[in-house]
Length: 218
Image (cartoon, rainbow, N blue to C red; front, side, top):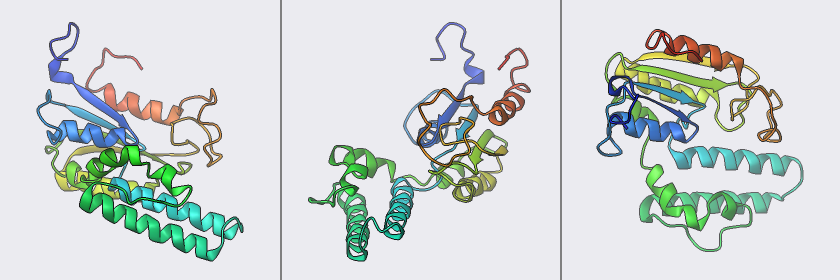
């Protein structure tokens, strides 16, 4: 990429959204292997904790909601929770999923994704963030309407950036969904709808980029 015409290798930045933020951190820290030097990061609605931990939190929340709504019984909820714990243990110790996962859970923890899940879960984003250079420019977003990643969870990642003494701009969005659209509904129903991109994040990105590229217009 640095050899590509029009690309300034001294100004390379990577923006990662959701789990893409993990890959951005892997590139910037060199944990993914040799890569061009990265000079700035944007981590938007990032994966803030280990991959299987965030899946566990999301599944447990869904099970609790289904139990409250009377959609599943207490014994069914307990079975799902137990199977979830066993599946995570198997992925972390053996890199594979156990057979016969309950319906629903086998969609979230798909056997074809087992290798990816095991490999991605090896990394704590906060520990990767703590490896960035001092004063490294980072823009981080979270939103009060994101149903997949909470601002409280993103604080874990921010702690790693603080430990590294990075130059971090953190923006807490309001009424913005996980895919960065202006949608306060707190559902995934409108992810594919032609809603406007978050103006709040656009402004934050403009302020983040302009001091480094005054010639660039967003």
